[in-house]
Image 1: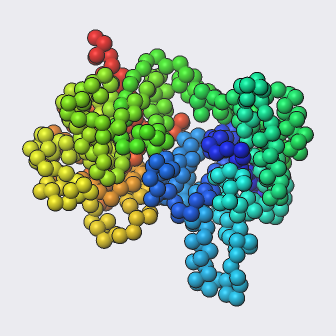
Image 2: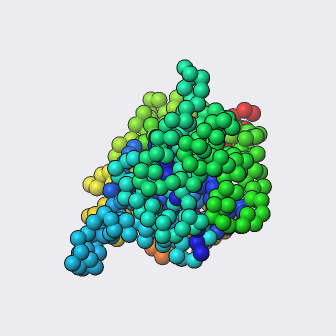
Image 3: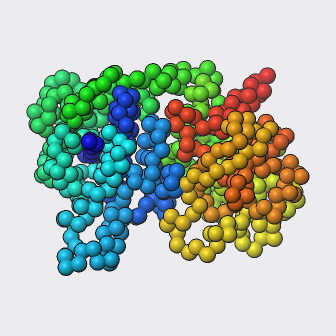
Length: 538
């Protein structure tokens, strides 16, 4: 029988429910359990696919093409197992499903209400992964903060679910904050007490409290929290600020969070968590033998969460190379021919990031021209790859008005154009080329050197592609298509022959990088940046 863990948050947002959920899942996985995590988001959008990155951070795409919350990236990076559409559910999707059923006549004669119809639909989605038979434990993270109007139906669904399944089959972990008042010189437990009181008012007694704190919690404070919040003292878990999110599983293991959870769920501990490879990764992460500075040129750099998977992929690739990667975020709008050397000349590598729309695109093209001419390692992702094609067309092939139809649909040389199947689509949500697609790689290329194999799959999120009408012209001039989709013949990877490292991918390699399997293109890119750094010091 599948067991369920619900993770709620209180006091304030951004406490790190996703990291705690992923860390607990990692520990349970390391004990031999089959674990997955799902995220329930209280916003009314069907998914984050149409949200501006400034609103929500990056949109994380799964293998099956779901546009999801960025926390699913944490789940995959920690567990090294793919997520799916079923791992991210929003209020919008819940209401859409209920309304569709009402229109189909499923509720004939009934008044459709939040209770029981909305809460039943929430519970149905909570059980989908458990009912698959693939998992021993399903962890469900509830977005938002207890007390929010938006999250009330989810909290009520958890109350019902817990009552239906029984206390040893479904437990609630409440993540809360123990703030430190510098003027008083002490930690304060009152916000946690009030947060738990709010949960109790909704009919939920948390089984475990995980307390975010900047300072260690004394035994007296633990005892006080346990007394006022009706939990066992060993169920008061300290979650102190960590230098890296990848340290959190080991901190939670030290606090015996996994043991407490298994005890509550009446599951055997099996054996101690096998975290040796994780410790090895942390050792390489914290003790680098080299350092490189890589520029990330993008539109949304004011909010680093817009490029969360890219920054994490650099951490994984850096550890693999025993190298500290310092990412310098550079707004593409700030780059001009007059200042490009000042902006990029000191870097050992430049990644041009994905994005949509015309803002900042000329800055990206200018950055690519500079790194191409000065043989600085370059990596382009999605729009970054498309900009590399445009730059090469303008400055090497002499196609002066080379462009993408996304920006200028009247340009004579539309070297990037909209895919045929996208041309008649008018709706925005979930209609791009999404999810994993195959790619065949040519031997003898930089891409083949990175992957070490011919047949791969990568995840996509785009509407525009390389215009194959120009392919022969580009390859004659030295830009080769080293990766091709075997079915559609779309160009997936371009690279330059006579350059230390100049690779662009139409897909999003960052989405498949994990602690256990750093993405090979990022690993090779960081290695190329290290080589470039050596040359500059000779």
